[in-house]
Length: 491
Image 1 (cartoon, rainbow, N blue to C red):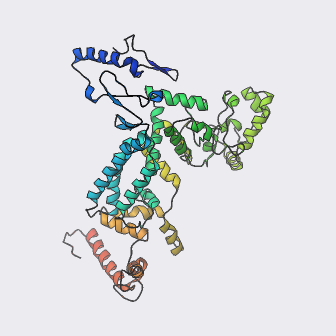
Image 2 (cartoon, rainbow, N blue to C red):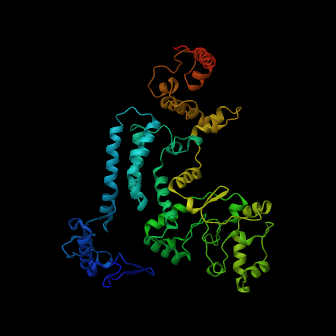
C-alpha cells in the first residue's frame, strides 16, 4: 500500500530510491492514514504511544508536533532503534549503549566470584555469559576506547580475584595448541565482529542498507570490492568515511599475514597495498586500473621473471606515456618477493579477494567472525614467556611444544588437574622456594626431604621421597590397567 500510494515519494540517495525512508514532515500523516486503513482489514495496529519522531541533519533539535507522536531532541536525548540508541550527544549515546551493559556484566560476575571456579572455568563464564552481552552492540557500532579499557579491567579482576595476573593475557588468549586457554581477547573480539560485516556486505542476498557503503567505496576507491590482502587506503580517503568504516579498514590492514609463498605474492593487489609503496605511501594509478591492471602476477612472466616494457605495453595496449608508471610499478616489488617467485613460479594461480593466511587466500564469503578472530590471534604470534625459560633450562631436550601443550587435555578431563598442569607449564606453581621469597613460608626447603630448595624441578624429578611415591603410584596404576581382575584401589 505504501509503494502504490502516489503521494508517498521515495527518498533519493546515492543514486537509489528508498521507499520506506522519507521526509517525516511531509509523509507522517500519509503513512499513518495508510496504516490505519491497513489496520481496518488486518486487525494489526502500531502502538502510537511508543512511536517517536526526531529530526536529523539540519533539522536536528527541532521540536516536532506531528500527529501527536512523541518528539525526541537528538541533541539532548536518544532514540532507540532495534536495540541501539542514537544521538548527536555522543557521551549520552555511549552511556545508553555501553555503560549500562558494562554495569550488567559487573553485577553478573560478582555472583560468579562467590564460587570456587578454576581459571579455565572463569574463562568459560566470561566468554559465554559476560562478553556475550556486548556482542550485538559491538557488531553494529564503533566501541569507545574507554569501554574496551573498562572491560579489560573487569576481565582481569574476575580471572585473578582482583590480584596481579600471574600469566600474561596474550598467553591465556592463545589457542590450546599454542599454550593458551582460549580466553577471549576483548579488543580482538570486537575487531572480528566488525570485520564480519564485510561478509554480510558482499553476501549475494540484496538489502537496501548495502547501497550506501558500496556507493562510498566505489566513490573513494573506484570499486566496492576493495577487501584484498593488505589493502591500506590513505588517511585522506579514510576521513571521508564514517568512523565505523574507518575502523573496519584499520582492522583489515592488520589481518593478513606477510606473503611467503609465490601464490600469495602473485595474488597481491597492486593498488593501495601496504607492501607496495611510492614515496613511502601506497598508491593508485587510475588509468592503469581502467586497463584491468590490478594484480602483481600481471607483472611477471610464467617462468617467474619480470616482464619487459614492450611485452607489458603490447599485452595491455598501453602508450609510451605509461612507460614511467610501468617502471614505478616494477620498482615497488620487494626484492625478496622477486626471488621467491623466480625460484618457484606457479603456472596458474587462484586470484581472489579475501584474507591472506600464510600460504592460502580465505575468500570473503567464508570470513565469519569466529574465523577472523582465530586468524587475528594466530597472526599476533605470541609465545608464552615460560617457553623460553624451559628451552633455556633443558637445552639438551628437543621439546615438542604442541604435544606438551595438548597433553593435559588428552589425559584428563578433571578441571583441577588441567589447571595444576597448566601452572607447571607456565612456571606459576609456587612452592616453598618462591613462597619464602614472598614471605609466605618459613622455609625454602623441600617439605619432604628438607635437603634442597623446593621448586617444581626438585619436587617432581630429584626429591627421593616423591620419586619413590611416584614409582609406587604408577606401578599400581599399570597393574590395574593391565589386569583382568577388578578390585578397589585406595591410595
